[in-house]
Image (cartoon, rainbow, N blue to C red; front, side):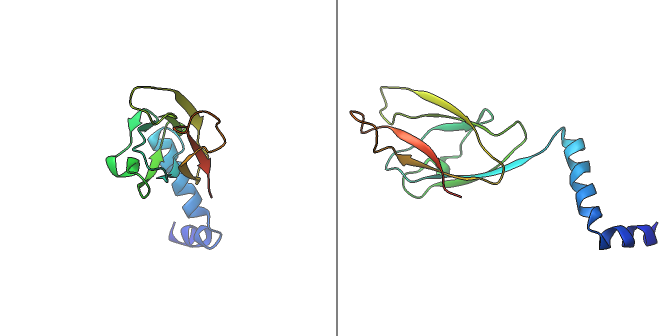
Length: 119
């Protein structure tokens, strides 16, 4: 077994087999995302139904690294006003880095927030 394992390691197969085993045990593939907040507002959002930690929602410098096991579906209120809600949902790509930013192209709504891919 040790000889076979050494041969497999030299081909890099052990790591891939370990990742496949982890996916099988966990019930599926995991995806990792970074979500940043570059707006002057607190942004409330969920990823796969889990609420963002407070530091991720902080204005201008908040960020969070998420490991998702249920598809990486983000849902957030794209209107920063407290008395108005307008939720949108996106499926994030594995390894993506995203930023909440003010959407300056929206005419008539200076409170519009969009989620942009930045890496």
